[in-house]
Length: 458
Image 1 (cartoon, rainbow, N blue to C red):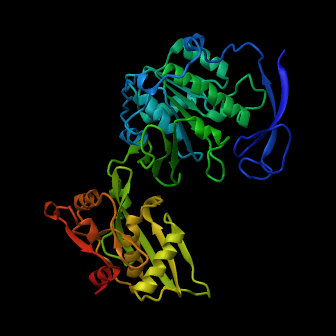
Image 2 (image 1 turned 180 degrees about the vertical axis):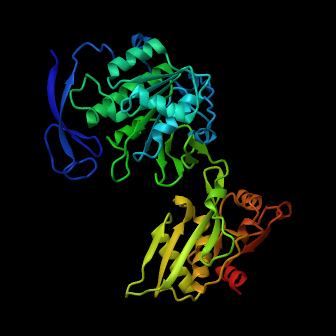
Image 3 (image 1 turned 45 degrees about the vertical axis):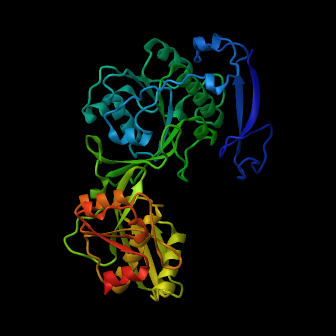
């Protein structure tokens, strides 16, 4: 006879309590506890993932020097953007969680990956769509894969029975919020169900060495739905971002145990699926026939990839008493700091001006190397003097108006030269050990903000 038990779970962090409480002691949020009825089997575990490893002797501590390590080869997909974001390919036995807004293209991306793995047996589990709907999408993508199997099921017990028979090389679940385990009586998508289903899939991934991809929903705040422990259980968390009314999508890494967390991949949504954007700098720069004031180009880095992005500014006299300071894709506090530097060190009266800043392409940039591009963009709009569209910037601006060095400036210079820029402003402290003769672009090495102002607006 199964034992019934009622418990309360925090919808924000997944903390458990025997009774309802107003404020969660774990995360501090108010009114997030909901009641769920739990039902666990006492003895039987029929239908759950089991392997021969569970029959072995209990593990014992071993010296780290005696542990043998064999580096397994990663599964390479035809999607170079996904390989880069994952750190070089799919790691066997890893669990990857992909989150994003509804309609952004998560299912399309995963089905596209499933159909591209020609040499692997892939099982695509869908709890949201029927077989016919998935077939229609596959026909639209135009790819055929005889070893891609579709299973429309939400019960984990039946899923694991099919897994044992099929023995797939890659498992994709769309989505984790739709799965249901009979060991928990609460509904699908609840805190306990999401945690239990993820734990069963995690055990399967680690014991069988099969990589598992989980598609997850997000909340209205933009966070992954379900308990916070879900992000701690998986190996990699990917965020699929972008405006679904626009064509470009960004796949960003927020957690990765097997690679860098600063990588991103860029896709273009087309009628036949998602297309990789191998040279994102070209799409991040507007194609304009003439120069406009307030537009500059900054050289930034996302992981190992150099990007040239367009910084747009609009400075106009404040109509009301308090000037507005608005930024999109750039830290608002850092914008206020740079405005203070321009007013104090440069002598520009920006205290009575409305300042609007935008990073083109929908990117969110945290690299301080675009500080100089932001300052030049603001002054260009303030003076209504256009900066040449063949000029790039790659330097940080300090509080005293000094131009500070940034890392890997050689890659930024090379990317600027490749895209046809004729000059770039960098810090003179970056010139040490840098062979400027091998570049076909003119490099301006400056140490003060005044030197940049005089070179651009004199």
